Length: 360
Image (cartoon, rainbow, N blue to C red):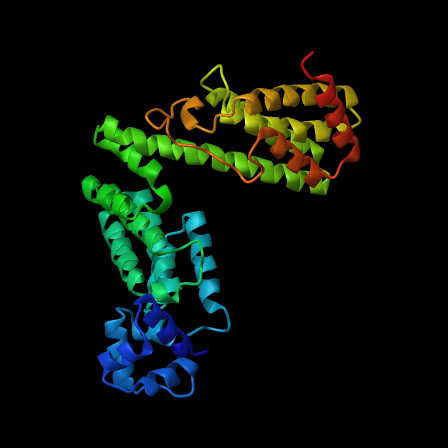
């Protein structure tokens, strides 16, 4: 095992915004002692390790920072996940065995909490959900051990809030999610619960609108990302399919007849479709798609509107704006995509299209 005590003391001290001098005063030691601990040139006495664990509100294991080199934590987690996928209840007993072996390891406690949550929800069993709640709450005390970037304090609280919802303590669950709704990560869950369970439609509306906004534009980013993946791998059938999916979604969500932020995105998607057609030697079809893209570019850039008010269902949030990383204008976005595709024929055809589509 590898000990990470010095690194953890330094990180926890900085999290509390303490200087070495201040921590030394709290522990009644010299500043030099703290400096030596943090550089690894000396190790605190057991008494001081216990005091620091209490002060930093973490377990001794978390403070020591044991790292298991044989990756057994990962193996246990994957095994438990596989049992859950199969719906095998043996996962519950194996989770308890893992907890006996590693009672203070964040990765194990979190994984076992997830096991109990899964079976508790599937079987509508309050005892299993109660155990999941207990483990998730304890995992918060061990969070300093966490090395998974997809998990943080807010995501753990989200699990806790979800369990309260499943246990019928709806208002408490919503309260927890609202309090830890970093970046709107629980907007959809909160909006759903407020509207369906609590019947608070007006209060639910802004949560649902934010969730819709984030979901739509996250999906569009995913569509564009996948399109480039398929372009790079030469899978132009998949490229057409994923882009068509994105277009279908945008067309169903476009609310207004005027300019829409969705037009800017759609222009880029049309360029990607045209690229796929050229690779299949369908030049005529590619040119038709480019003409549509050119029309959208001119329409959007003539009267740009980055507001979300043109998206259906996103009511009451008309002041929200949406921007992407491709470019400030529709033309800049298309230019960026063309440069990334590195298709000289497509670029030449696009330039020709823009000239031919100039207003007479």
